[in-house]
Image (cartoon, rainbow, N blue to C red; front, side, top):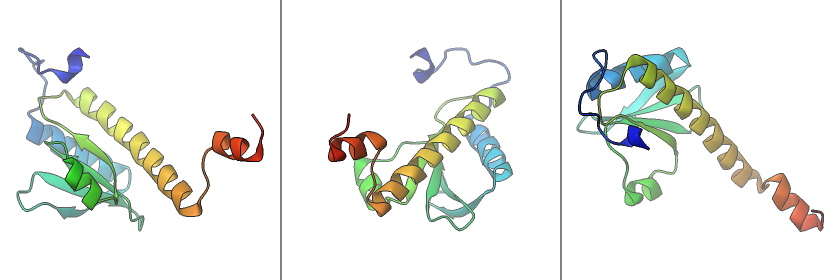
Length: 127
């Protein structure tokens, strides 16, 4: 829980948020992502992999509920608001990759009309 609150004395190798976001973009590029859009202020970047319509949002601030409703193509967000070490950024990128994979599975299940095995078992009377 303490990781959510800014540290009073960040580690000496911590990167400011702008640099941490740049490192995250580089790491995501290594995973096949490319920038497909950015907001007008230039503080949010939208990345995609291949021709998948899903997006990964990289920003220094969270989205509002209205933004979430208006942009369902965003499967996950990686938000950096405070200084982070390169190792912390790498861990955040790995978590974002898992979040994107989960978002793609949920999207694909919703599109095919299939739910989880538990839902399928409940519908068939199994437990």
